[in-house]
Image (spheres, rainbow, N blue to C red):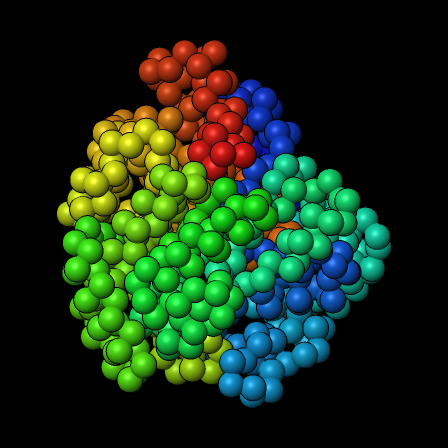
Length: 470
């Protein structure tokens, strides 16, 4: 089912060069510095419950598409936030998924799933309603084996390191269990403080109180609040974190005076307590906090990841029923040149600061992001991801950024996934696309062949390790 030349050019010369470059990097270890897999998988090392819980329920790429065709999330087993019942029969969920597998034609999700089915479970035919029960039984049987438990799959995938993402309120007990278990697999955390930075989060006020309780700081004062962040960042770093992660609606930053910051902080707490947060104040607070996080990164060395531009929870009724991260996050136009100016004016020339900027707005690559990363020493470009981690999106990314930012102001690949079995396939797609892009440069006589081999290795492995201090 999987053609050995998939994603390579139809031009014979470019295809031959692509094959050679790919052969040199395809077996390199996987570095996964940004993702959302569950650390409990590695800590407890229990068998995955069933094929539906492995492939359908946790993967918003999958259930988003099915929902778009009128299939309720309840029938797909997605847990509800309001306690309403959902399907718990894995076989029923799988049958529904298999019957609608045709919906994924032409999508990257289809490529990832096909590769996982073939490589992990030896499935030779295309998933369909006709073979739903047979494929379910085959996968379920494998999942009961010791060599299909999370740690064994981690090793089979040749994962060198994987980062999960946790709230500052998370005690990181699963990470502690992993560290104390004696297992050699490297699973690290990342500091994601949105829950105590975004005043428009409905839990913000109670989260601030929890932040105080956890850190012993008075987080209803600006000084105590910032001290609490420093404490938690230090704890996360001690638990393996090398980066923080910030998913703001926009890329706006600010650099207010101490008096302005204190006044804004007091207003935000008052508004949040009343449930009447002023959007402009919330946006300014998030903007200032990105600058504060950059300042802290200079102190503690954590890499600062910023990924703005999603209108999150766009589907209000779905959000109320199922909560966050249920596939209703939609890309929006995003400004970077003006939005990042306050932060970059303060810290942009610091060689010891590393900021990795992502985008959901492709129109900014050539116009804004590549020129910014091609100038400021602290700024690097994250890969095409989320809505653009498809072959054409990855190609456009290289075409729009390489001419201005080159390769070495980018940070390699990260898979950004909650779907554990798709990780090798996602990296494989990225390696094939990058090797194809480099092969075209070689065949156009724009890059020497020996340089292409070096760049291919860096894109597949070296840049991610360097960018994330791994």
